[in-house]
Each structure stands twice: as structure tokens, then as C-alpha cells.
Amino acid sequence: MVSKTRDRLREFLNNYQTIYKGEVEFKKRMISLLSFPNCFDRSLLHAHFTASVWVVNESFDEAILTHHAKLDRWLQLGGHADGDENLLRVAKKELNEESGLTRVQAYFDRIFDIDIHTIPERKGVPQHEHYDVRFLFVADKEEEINFNHESKNVAWVPLTSIAQLCNGNDSILRMIEKTEQIRREMSVRH
Image (tube, rainbow, N blue to C red; front, side):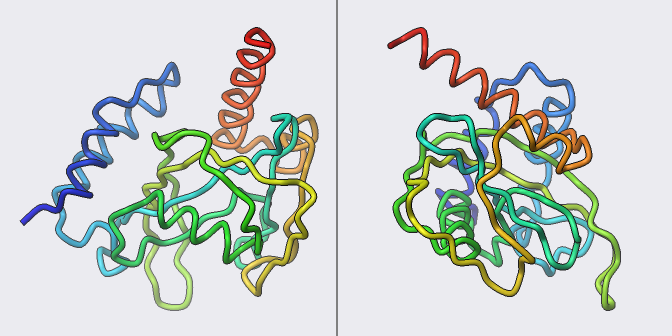
């Protein structure tokens, strides 16, 4: 039996509009992965859903990144769903666990970005893909960041510095572009 939460994710994905060619393909593959009963669990070895959060300050000119301990790369906050089909809830939980921030708010409850990326084999877990659904959150920059063992560091980074820090990671560059677009739209409204 398919849950209402899974149906809602399918609806969100079906309605997700993007100008990015890669995301169009990701969307099709994500909708297809939803047919696997355990697609939100690591027990699906070839691929499973994860949730991330792109956290920006109120000015939309900085974002929080984590220097991931295992991957040794700067990335957005996020992690495994571990069976939870409510990916917005998973994203918020990961945000809190990985940064300690509590004064945060989802900018909207729809999907901000999607990505599929390969995770290398590690400690007996075969190479697999993360089907990452990302949400946009705004955080209070004055709140102290407290990171956990999963990170070497967690920090606010100006959008203008992120591309170099992330070695041109396409998915992060895409989220920067989307953030800048929102900031432009906000300035037109005010």
C-alpha cells in the first residue's frame, strides 16, 4: 500500500518545473524509483532517497555549507531518509543535527532542487546513487552553529565564494543560481 506521503512526493515531483536539463532527467528517474517499496531506506542498495537543505541568510547572499568528514568536500546539509517518507521533515532534522540551528524556516514547502549523484563504495557498502530532494530554508545568521562528528566544519559562506570552495560542483552552482534569482525577485518586489 502506497502512503499519502509518498503520493504527495510523487505529486510534488510531477509538478516540479525546472529550466535545467539535468533536473528534467532526475525528475523522471525519481518518479520511477518511487515504485520500490524500500526506496526511502538504505536497504535498497543501488539507490535511495535522501533529503538536503539549502540554508540561506535573510539577505539571500550567504549559505551554510558543511565540510563533510567522510567525503572531504564542502556540501549542503542533508542525509538519509532512513525509512521516513516525509523528506521535508528529514531535511529539517538533518539541518538541526548537522548545524544545531533551531531558528530556521522553510522558505516554501515545495521542492527547491533535485539531484542524483553517485556515492563511492565504502566499508562494504557498494557504490550507489542518492536521489536527493532539496528544500530551501532561511536561518537566523546570529544563531550559533554547533556541528557534529559528520563534519570537519560548518560555516556561513558568501554565495560569491561557494563555487571555488565546492570545485564547481554543478548541483551547488545550480542552487546558487536559483538563490540569486529569488534575491532578484525579492528586490523587484521591494
